[in-house]
Image (cartoon, rainbow, N blue to C red; front, side, top):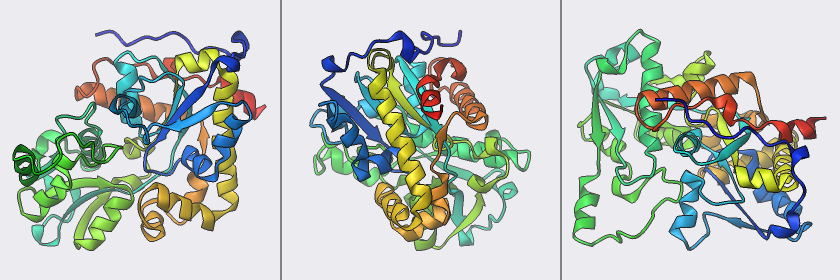
Length: 364
């Protein structure tokens, strides 16, 4: 199958400013450390667009499920997304015309966890064991499943094993399925907007691990380190701390800052506003660690304690959006993984997806 191809990045010099025809810009981000999240909490992004008399709206707060789904499929014109790369890759691979206007890399805990009584101490001990992975069959893109397999595969590489050396076990919360079938739960409810935990499968991997249905699971971020502590779980490996960036590469490393092509083509000035807000927020964060960590805890829906454990006490210094070659290489490697595992329909050439012009213009 041929690599998906979209039109080349549009130079800001080729497009006239048509801001007078732009009435609304939509934004969305994942519950993770991003410059966009800080810019929104600080109100700086809103201020940029207020100057142009343009309304800025959150996808998350929309009453329309179709609008909210754009967080994953990026179907909404004049929208920006900063977050996990897997949904963004899937949307682009599926033919959605988007462009990457920046990449950010904030290393985070990526834990393979087991019970302390499981007699699994190292990655090599996973051979032949049951590994629980999420199954969100109703999701537009099951990024939780993809990132779990990615984390497992990368960890196994450190001991020359492959995923074929373990037993993959789909995890589902059968009690929730039964409740939904009996209409005890609202089947129309979206649950977590970000899709990290659909109510149908909430905490399925953890339940499967604690009840002995599986021997190990993958969790990442602040949630992972808190769960590991709360349930006295053994960390087999934190692959997010490995020295090789390709082995650390996953849904959050790097994270993509994307806009739709229509937005970039017709409103380059407003796209530049977004990049400026993100970069300004990141530079402010570098100088204000305490306040930044409070913002990050709010973004991650966690506490400063767990943000420090998951992202490091220098988390404020990890907010950097650019076009670093390591990030580009890792994004391509992740994309190839997703195609190999059939999470995306077409292979992609990441370099064709990138649109660095707006970012480069503010660096001059």
